[in-house]
Image (cartoon, rainbow, N blue to C red; front, side, top):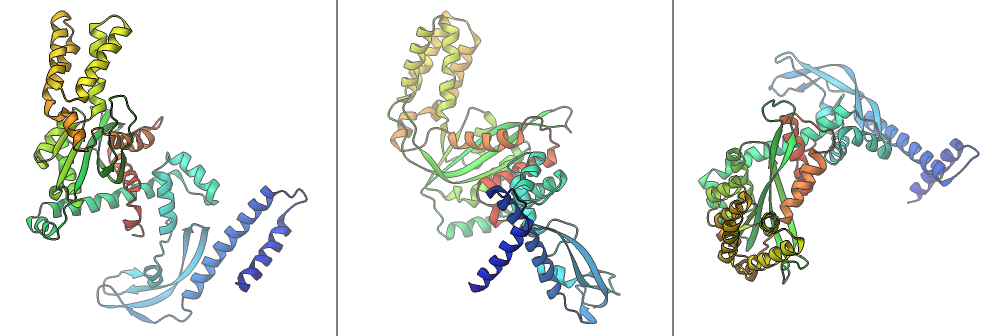
Length: 433
């Protein structure tokens, strides 16, 4: 601790020597930060220098099994969280496979002419939050380290690539009967697990036929609390242990990810598996294919939103419209879906508006998924707020920022990286690779 005090005193003297007459706390903060940044840079540079043996072995074993011969000391430029620095390492060349290597690079994880693993991790964390140009400026302001838009994009997309690689491994395992049996024998049986699927639009530049593509998003989670006691009451249900997954692909391909991500959370073994979604056919087709025994619930809020267009088509005054919607919501809340459909049918007789008949068909199609009174009695969550939040956080807040136009490959990578970050999976990824 005495050493720290001595070092601090030296830093204080150094900071004072660089301050001008107009001393303010801001000036002290900025100068101290610059000094510490330079101290950090030189500390790393000198540490690496001491680790490079001045008398290297003349020969070492090459990866191919032959011997590699020492050639010379080779310089490299490193880009670290304390800025750019130079390092010298022993360089070897194998006469058998002609592969050159620097053992210190492997030993310490050095990445010449690239962002260091730690810098890349922090840059990617910024890239999943903000457009690369904005993120670059903020990152430099916070860290005093300059990175380009391209470097931030590359670091962020690299995380997406790692997520993709892990998903591919998981998809392969989820198709193996032996692996599924092993999961079952391990006694993995979640008491109640929720799943939800949705989609958000992403502006694509490299698909002339489809300028806007669906970014499909899924989530697995647990939930606590109870719905309100009335249709317009305050909702207090909170999701926890949320894990997101996403992709831009046809529904059939997304189904593979849906299944494998579910297996990763033992959805196929859950005592109660509850699936939530809006009325999109592709969602319920995937649920029927992969988890046919699950409890299927049509999101309460999506179902409720269909009432007002019917009321506006059938009634002229806002009072009449509000009154009808209120009564129909109460029927929905109580699970009286047949009465709700009958009420829509009656309006369709006196008012030939397409939206009324379409809505009646919609309710009839999803009748089994609208047993809200029963679902509430079981303590199930009946609103898909969790996946709606995911669509906003991944789709709206990152992928649909003003002016954003993506190519499909990069959009997939960035979306997957953000999903991993929001799922608290960041630390489990091999970001040092």
